[in-house]
Image (cartoon, rainbow, N blue to C red; front, side, top):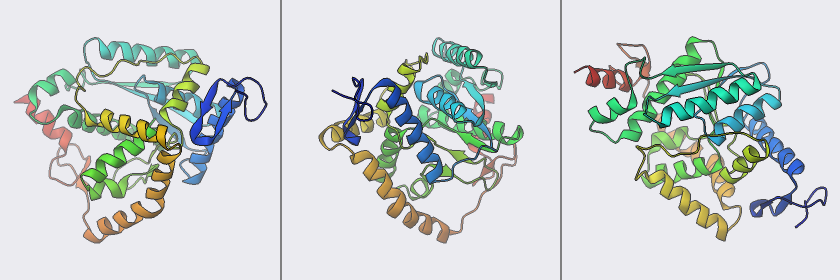
Length: 299
């Protein structure tokens, strides 16, 4: 198998692009895909101050490194969830990565915030993953707003996006469908959120991380057993194997034709957010979800 560009021996085969690449050409391909995704939706500029959410996984670390290579002003943000075993390992990976590359890093420790995830899981009756996601988004946004970052970037790849889109469609969740996409505007108290890896697959990001020598934390969350998201990802992997290119076609079709329709429906409803009466975070209720979690933990 030969590299499509230079004809050297290929090390990465990409059926969805009808291509194969050597290591050097694949890294160039990956960079061009990220740049194309940023440019297509005007996600950020070189003047932006970019806060990158770092979980310790391959996607967020690859994103941080690639944005830096492309000349963006990046700072890492890690949320330490205080899960025994898992959280110290993930935090160690992030800290070593940032030290190795000279990246500034902000750590928000949920134990210090009075919201260690094991205690949240023990206290709440709702599905745990939903509460954890709510907590992480809260501190992502709060950190970005309080510390003057103009963009918050996350490492969601194409596989993440099509799985989430499928989940939202199966529930016909109009609010989430109207918001889903590579960017969310900075309005109503929220920081601008972007997903620069939306054009690249998890397989492509994994190859990038391997070729760039990125150490990453790959153990699944010990509390995420039975999550439907993983099932949907596997279904899409099987579909992509049978029909290469279907993931990007599905997602691009949604962005062009589906999302505008759902945005129009949500705009017609005229609902607006207000500041939480406790912390000032944007919410549709009197008290935001994270403050309600705090109250439950204090009872």
